[in-house]
Image (cartoon, rainbow, N blue to C red; front, side, top):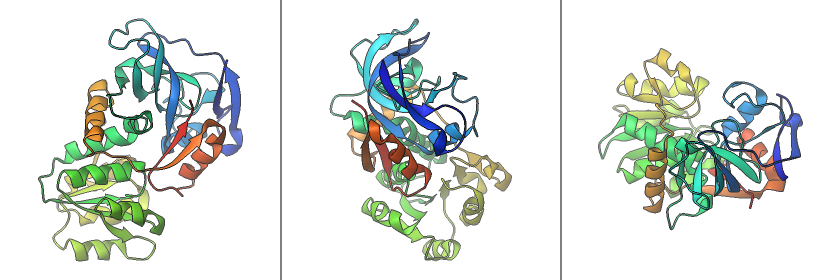
Length: 307
Protein backbone atom coordinates (compact mmCIF):
# COMPACT_ATOMS: atom_id res chain seq x y z
CA UNK A 1 0.00 0.00 0.00
CA UNK A 2 1.13 3.53 -0.72
CA UNK A 3 -0.23 6.98 -0.01
CA UNK A 4 -1.81 9.12 -2.69
CA UNK A 5 -3.64 12.43 -2.84
CA UNK A 6 -6.60 12.95 -5.10
CA UNK A 7 -10.33 13.45 -5.18
CA UNK A 8 -13.39 11.30 -4.51
CA UNK A 9 -15.74 13.19 -6.83
CA UNK A 10 -15.66 16.22 -9.10
CA UNK A 11 -15.65 19.59 -7.40
CA UNK A 12 -13.50 22.18 -5.68
CA UNK A 13 -10.74 21.76 -3.10
CA UNK A 14 -13.26 20.31 -0.64
CA UNK A 15 -13.36 17.01 -2.60
CA UNK A 16 -9.60 16.41 -2.22
CA UNK A 17 -8.37 13.70 0.11
CA UNK A 18 -5.41 11.53 1.07
CA UNK A 19 -5.95 7.80 0.74
CA UNK A 20 -3.98 4.56 0.66
CA UNK A 21 -4.01 2.36 -2.40
CA UNK A 22 -2.17 -0.74 -3.64
CA UNK A 23 0.56 -0.16 -6.19
CA UNK A 24 -1.09 0.16 -9.61
CA UNK A 25 -0.51 -2.68 -12.04
CA UNK A 26 1.02 -1.42 -15.29
CA UNK A 27 -1.09 -2.26 -18.30
CA UNK A 28 -0.03 -2.65 -21.91
CA UNK A 29 2.33 0.18 -22.81
CA UNK A 30 2.75 1.38 -19.22
CA UNK A 31 5.49 1.38 -16.59
CA UNK A 32 5.04 1.40 -12.83
CA UNK A 33 7.36 3.91 -11.16
CA UNK A 34 8.25 4.90 -7.64
CA UNK A 35 7.59 8.62 -7.75
CA UNK A 36 10.40 10.87 -6.60
CA UNK A 37 9.03 14.24 -7.78
CA UNK A 38 5.66 15.24 -9.24
CA UNK A 39 4.99 18.46 -11.12
CA UNK A 40 1.98 20.64 -10.28
CA UNK A 41 0.00 22.18 -13.14
CA UNK A 42 -3.22 24.16 -13.67
CA UNK A 43 -4.63 21.20 -15.57
CA UNK A 44 -4.60 19.23 -12.31
CA UNK A 45 -7.34 21.29 -10.69
CA UNK A 46 -9.27 21.49 -13.98
CA UNK A 47 -9.38 17.68 -14.03
CA UNK A 48 -10.54 17.65 -10.41
CA UNK A 49 -13.30 20.12 -11.24
CA UNK A 50 -14.62 17.88 -14.02
CA UNK A 51 -14.15 20.53 -16.70
CA UNK A 52 -12.09 18.16 -18.83
CA UNK A 53 -13.79 14.84 -18.02
CA UNK A 54 -12.49 11.97 -20.14
CA UNK A 55 -8.90 13.20 -20.20
CA UNK A 56 -7.97 11.03 -17.22
CA UNK A 57 -8.58 7.61 -18.75
CA UNK A 58 -12.01 7.09 -17.18
CA UNK A 59 -10.61 5.53 -14.00
CA UNK A 60 -12.95 5.06 -11.04
CA UNK A 61 -12.97 7.36 -8.03
CA UNK A 62 -11.00 8.14 -6.00
CA UNK A 63 -8.66 9.48 -8.64
CA UNK A 64 -5.09 10.62 -8.03
CA UNK A 65 -4.13 14.16 -8.97
CA UNK A 66 -1.18 15.05 -11.19
CA UNK A 67 -0.01 14.16 -14.68
CA UNK A 68 3.80 14.54 -14.75
CA UNK A 69 6.49 12.91 -12.64
CA UNK A 70 10.03 11.66 -12.36
CA UNK A 71 11.02 8.46 -10.59
CA UNK A 72 12.36 4.91 -10.92
CA UNK A 73 10.82 2.09 -12.96
CA UNK A 74 9.58 -0.74 -10.72
CA UNK A 75 7.77 -2.88 -13.31
CA UNK A 76 6.84 -2.94 -16.99
CA UNK A 77 3.59 -3.78 -18.70
CA UNK A 78 3.27 -5.71 -21.94
CA UNK A 79 4.90 -4.29 -25.07
CA UNK A 80 7.34 -2.08 -23.15
CA UNK A 81 10.80 -2.77 -24.52
CA UNK A 82 12.58 0.58 -24.46
CA UNK A 83 12.60 1.06 -20.67
CA UNK A 84 14.05 -1.25 -18.02
CA UNK A 85 13.32 -1.87 -14.36
CA UNK A 86 15.63 0.41 -12.40
CA UNK A 87 15.72 3.18 -15.01
CA UNK A 88 15.38 6.74 -13.77
CA UNK A 89 12.63 8.20 -15.94
CA UNK A 90 10.28 11.14 -16.36
CA UNK A 91 7.05 11.46 -18.27
CA UNK A 92 3.27 11.68 -18.41
CA UNK A 93 0.55 9.77 -16.59
CA UNK A 94 -1.71 10.16 -19.63
CA UNK A 95 -3.80 7.10 -18.85
CA UNK A 96 -5.14 8.54 -15.61
CA UNK A 97 -2.75 7.05 -13.07
CA UNK A 98 -2.07 10.36 -11.30
CA UNK A 99 1.32 11.41 -9.95
CA UNK A 100 0.69 12.84 -6.46
CA UNK A 101 1.43 9.41 -5.06
CA UNK A 102 4.22 7.16 -3.84
CA UNK A 103 3.84 4.96 -6.94
CA UNK A 104 2.05 5.44 -10.24
CA UNK A 105 1.93 4.28 -13.84
CA UNK A 106 3.25 6.35 -16.72
CA UNK A 107 2.52 5.89 -20.40
CA UNK A 108 5.71 4.29 -21.75
CA UNK A 109 5.63 6.00 -25.19
CA UNK A 110 5.39 9.30 -23.30
CA UNK A 111 8.21 8.52 -20.87
CA UNK A 112 11.98 8.93 -21.26
CA UNK A 113 15.12 8.17 -19.31
CA UNK A 114 16.54 11.01 -17.22
CA UNK A 115 19.97 11.78 -18.69
CA UNK A 116 22.99 11.79 -16.42
CA UNK A 117 23.50 15.19 -14.86
CA UNK A 118 19.82 16.15 -14.79
CA UNK A 119 18.05 16.05 -11.43
CA UNK A 120 14.69 14.36 -10.93
CA UNK A 121 13.33 17.69 -9.70
CA UNK A 122 14.13 19.43 -12.98
CA UNK A 123 13.04 16.41 -15.03
CA UNK A 124 9.62 16.42 -13.36
CA UNK A 125 8.96 19.94 -14.69
CA UNK A 126 9.69 19.11 -18.32
CA UNK A 127 6.74 16.98 -19.53
CA UNK A 128 4.31 19.90 -19.42
CA UNK A 129 6.23 23.18 -19.28
CA UNK A 130 9.37 22.05 -21.11
CA UNK A 131 7.76 20.33 -24.07
CA UNK A 132 5.14 23.07 -24.40
CA UNK A 133 7.89 25.69 -24.67
CA UNK A 134 9.65 23.67 -27.36
CA UNK A 135 6.42 23.11 -29.27
CA UNK A 136 5.19 26.68 -29.30
CA UNK A 137 8.54 28.17 -30.34
CA UNK A 138 9.04 25.52 -33.02
CA UNK A 139 5.58 26.36 -34.32
CA UNK A 140 6.42 30.08 -34.47
CA UNK A 141 9.85 29.37 -36.00
CA UNK A 142 11.07 32.95 -35.56
CA UNK A 143 14.59 34.01 -36.58
CA UNK A 144 17.10 35.48 -34.15
CA UNK A 145 16.33 39.10 -33.41
CA UNK A 146 12.58 38.73 -33.85
CA UNK A 147 10.18 40.03 -31.19
CA UNK A 148 7.84 37.78 -29.22
CA UNK A 149 5.21 38.72 -26.64
CA UNK A 150 4.60 36.11 -23.92
CA UNK A 151 1.20 36.94 -22.46
CA UNK A 152 1.15 35.50 -18.95
CA UNK A 153 4.88 35.04 -18.58
CA UNK A 154 5.03 34.39 -14.84
CA UNK A 155 3.89 30.77 -14.58
CA UNK A 156 5.88 27.61 -15.18
CA UNK A 157 5.06 27.37 -18.89
CA UNK A 158 5.42 31.11 -19.48
CA UNK A 159 8.88 31.30 -17.95
CA UNK A 160 9.95 28.18 -19.85
CA UNK A 161 8.80 29.75 -23.13
CA UNK A 162 10.57 33.00 -22.28
CA UNK A 163 13.83 31.29 -21.25
CA UNK A 164 13.96 29.20 -24.40
CA UNK A 165 13.07 32.24 -26.54
CA UNK A 166 15.92 34.23 -24.98
CA UNK A 167 18.22 31.28 -25.73
CA UNK A 168 17.11 31.50 -29.36
CA UNK A 169 18.15 35.16 -29.36
CA UNK A 170 14.62 36.51 -29.59
CA UNK A 171 13.62 39.80 -28.02
CA UNK A 172 11.09 38.82 -25.35
CA UNK A 173 8.43 41.03 -23.80
CA UNK A 174 6.21 39.44 -21.18
CA UNK A 175 3.03 40.43 -19.34
CA UNK A 176 2.16 39.46 -15.79
CA UNK A 177 1.23 40.66 -12.32
CA UNK A 178 3.64 42.53 -10.06
CA UNK A 179 4.70 39.38 -8.19
CA UNK A 180 5.89 37.79 -11.45
CA UNK A 181 8.28 40.59 -12.43
CA UNK A 182 11.44 39.46 -10.61
CA UNK A 183 11.70 35.99 -12.13
CA UNK A 184 10.81 37.22 -15.61
CA UNK A 185 13.34 40.03 -15.64
CA UNK A 186 16.03 37.71 -14.24
CA UNK A 187 15.98 35.69 -17.46
CA UNK A 188 16.05 38.72 -19.75
CA UNK A 189 12.36 39.54 -20.28
CA UNK A 190 11.17 43.13 -20.69
CA UNK A 191 8.25 43.01 -18.29
CA UNK A 192 4.84 44.72 -18.56
CA UNK A 193 2.86 44.75 -15.31
CA UNK A 194 -0.80 44.46 -16.26
CA UNK A 195 -1.85 45.62 -12.80
CA UNK A 196 -0.05 48.96 -13.23
CA UNK A 197 0.12 49.59 -16.99
CA UNK A 198 -2.10 49.58 -20.04
CA UNK A 199 -0.76 46.43 -21.67
CA UNK A 200 -1.61 47.37 -25.26
CA UNK A 201 -0.20 50.88 -24.94
CA UNK A 202 3.00 49.72 -23.22
CA UNK A 203 3.54 46.97 -25.79
CA UNK A 204 3.02 49.33 -28.73
CA UNK A 205 5.52 51.74 -27.23
CA UNK A 206 8.13 48.98 -26.99
CA UNK A 207 7.38 47.42 -30.39
CA UNK A 208 5.66 50.05 -32.55
CA UNK A 209 5.58 47.90 -35.70
CA UNK A 210 3.93 44.94 -34.00
CA UNK A 211 5.27 41.66 -32.67
CA UNK A 212 6.62 38.95 -34.93
CA UNK A 213 4.97 36.37 -32.67
CA UNK A 214 2.65 36.22 -29.66
CA UNK A 215 2.40 33.33 -27.22
CA UNK A 216 -0.73 33.48 -25.08
CA UNK A 217 -0.98 31.67 -21.75
CA UNK A 218 -3.77 33.75 -20.22
CA UNK A 219 -6.69 33.34 -22.61
CA UNK A 220 -10.04 35.11 -22.47
CA UNK A 221 -10.16 38.89 -22.47
CA UNK A 222 -6.40 39.10 -22.07
CA UNK A 223 -5.87 37.14 -25.29
CA UNK A 224 -8.22 39.49 -27.11
CA UNK A 225 -6.28 42.47 -25.82
CA UNK A 226 -2.90 41.30 -27.11
CA UNK A 227 -3.87 39.49 -30.32
CA UNK A 228 -4.08 42.73 -32.39
CA UNK A 229 -0.50 43.57 -31.37
CA UNK A 230 0.95 40.99 -33.75
CA UNK A 231 2.03 41.67 -37.32
CA UNK A 232 0.35 38.49 -38.54
CA UNK A 233 -2.62 36.89 -36.72
CA UNK A 234 -1.37 33.47 -37.80
CA UNK A 235 1.59 33.98 -35.46
CA UNK A 236 -0.63 34.32 -32.41
CA UNK A 237 -0.41 30.95 -30.66
CA UNK A 238 -2.48 30.10 -27.60
CA UNK A 239 -1.64 27.37 -25.13
CA UNK A 240 -4.97 27.19 -23.30
CA UNK A 241 -7.69 29.08 -25.18
CA UNK A 242 -8.88 27.39 -28.38
CA UNK A 243 -10.97 30.42 -29.30
CA UNK A 244 -7.72 31.89 -30.64
CA UNK A 245 -8.84 30.45 -33.99
CA UNK A 246 -11.65 33.02 -34.04
CA UNK A 247 -8.96 35.71 -34.03
CA UNK A 248 -7.05 34.17 -36.92
CA UNK A 249 -4.46 32.56 -34.63
CA UNK A 250 -3.54 28.96 -33.84
CA UNK A 251 -3.66 26.60 -30.89
CA UNK A 252 -0.33 25.05 -29.96
CA UNK A 253 0.40 21.76 -31.69
CA UNK A 254 1.52 19.49 -28.86
CA UNK A 255 4.07 16.69 -29.15
CA UNK A 256 4.33 14.68 -25.94
CA UNK A 257 6.28 11.68 -27.21
CA UNK A 258 9.59 10.33 -25.95
CA UNK A 259 11.55 12.19 -28.64
CA UNK A 260 10.29 15.57 -27.46
CA UNK A 261 10.90 14.68 -23.83
CA UNK A 262 14.49 13.73 -24.65
CA UNK A 263 14.93 16.95 -26.59
CA UNK A 264 13.62 19.00 -23.65
CA UNK A 265 16.00 17.19 -21.32
CA UNK A 266 18.99 18.00 -23.55
CA UNK A 267 17.97 21.66 -23.63
CA UNK A 268 17.69 21.64 -19.85
CA UNK A 269 21.16 20.11 -19.53
CA UNK A 270 22.52 22.83 -21.81
CA UNK A 271 20.90 25.52 -19.66
CA UNK A 272 18.59 26.66 -22.48
CA UNK A 273 15.45 25.36 -20.80
CA UNK A 274 16.21 25.91 -17.13
CA UNK A 275 12.92 25.81 -15.19
CA UNK A 276 12.26 28.40 -12.51
CA UNK A 277 11.27 26.20 -9.56
CA UNK A 278 9.88 28.45 -6.86
CA UNK A 279 8.43 25.92 -4.40
CA UNK A 280 9.15 22.30 -3.42
CA UNK A 281 6.52 20.70 -1.17
CA UNK A 282 6.46 17.29 0.53
CA UNK A 283 3.55 15.00 -0.37
CA UNK A 284 1.91 15.81 2.96
CA UNK A 285 1.74 19.43 1.81
CA UNK A 286 0.21 18.64 -1.58
CA UNK A 287 -3.01 20.57 -0.79
CA UNK A 288 -1.01 23.79 -0.33
CA UNK A 289 1.04 23.10 -3.46
CA UNK A 290 -2.02 22.81 -5.68
CA UNK A 291 -3.82 25.68 -3.95
CA UNK A 292 -0.95 28.02 -4.79
CA UNK A 293 -1.18 27.11 -8.48
CA UNK A 294 -4.99 27.13 -8.53
CA UNK A 295 -5.13 30.58 -6.96
CA UNK A 296 -2.58 31.98 -9.39
CA UNK A 297 -0.32 33.17 -6.60
CA UNK A 298 2.85 31.44 -7.70
CA UNK A 299 5.60 32.44 -10.08
CA UNK A 300 7.43 29.68 -11.88
CA UNK A 301 7.01 25.98 -11.27
CA UNK A 302 5.77 24.18 -8.14
CA UNK A 303 6.73 20.56 -7.51
CA UNK A 304 5.95 17.90 -4.92
CA UNK A 305 8.90 15.88 -3.63
CA UNK A 306 7.45 12.46 -2.83
CA UNK A 307 10.41 10.15 -2.23
